[in-house]
Length: 390
Ligand code: PSV
Ligand code: MN
Image (cartoon, rainbow, N blue to C red; front, side):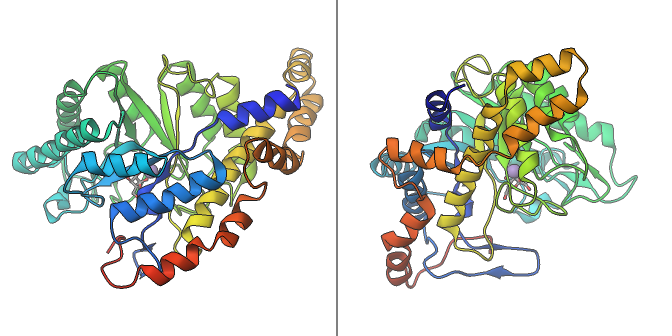
């Protein structure tokens, strides 16, 4: 691929940012407030628009309901449009209510299960009102102790809930099922891994696909392998990108292990996942799912978008012909060289050029910091209740 094609391919990549990245966040020990943080979903959209303005790569924002509850979702979608954005995935929240102590859709109590399903259906309404095409599901359901509940019965309840919700999906939309091997349940999580998610998605049908959150695996998991396998099966719905040192750290993607991000994007590229035609035309949804507890939020999202672009550019630089020859000949060292040559290439000058071609500042973070937007929101957003986890 020559540099012109590479710039075009990376330029086509779109990365969704999460509304919750713009609000206050922290750990279970402390949520730190930052000045200038949005007080409404509308202000979150304004911040997300900055990320897109400086990168031209983040045109959509995921919502989390009810964190982003609005009186009028059509109006919210209109506000997004006015700042050059659209509403991306709708993420129902079935973990932030006392009723969900023993789970949501897997809860032994039929009343609680019904409440959770009703919320999922309400989120489908939100999709219809905002033009969203993705319902992105993650369940905090699980058990803390062996024997606490019947593991198989919980799968049955999950199956029942998913079937009802799947049946209510509007035409042209899809459902992504995210897995996580731990947290908040300690003994058994009801959707712990891509295998469990895939089993449910296969049973549901074509419009149910697996969502890979890069922070949700045991240490040492070969994430690029499962990405390859899901893509081959047409079941890689999308990503929640972030970075982990220990657990689900939700840090800037590529911060802990840029080589892993490169390997993931390499499998995405080789499997055709960068093409809009992937997944029977639905494409792979590239989304960030990270929070910035210490650092400034908007430039941190910009940095994250750039990290995905850099990893993708390096993946596209891999000399496929040379790699094929090395693999055919069983030349392990040569194959390794091909990969490392691409990974060790400094793609930043090329991406700076790509941005200049797009009419952007070649250095988006610096340009944002110079813009004065941060000072403006810190001065203007005084009073009211900052949005966040608390
Ligand atoms: C759970 O850890 C998760 O990755 C899910 O995607 C949630 O929706 C999100 O984080 C909440 O921050
Ligand atoms: Mn996630």
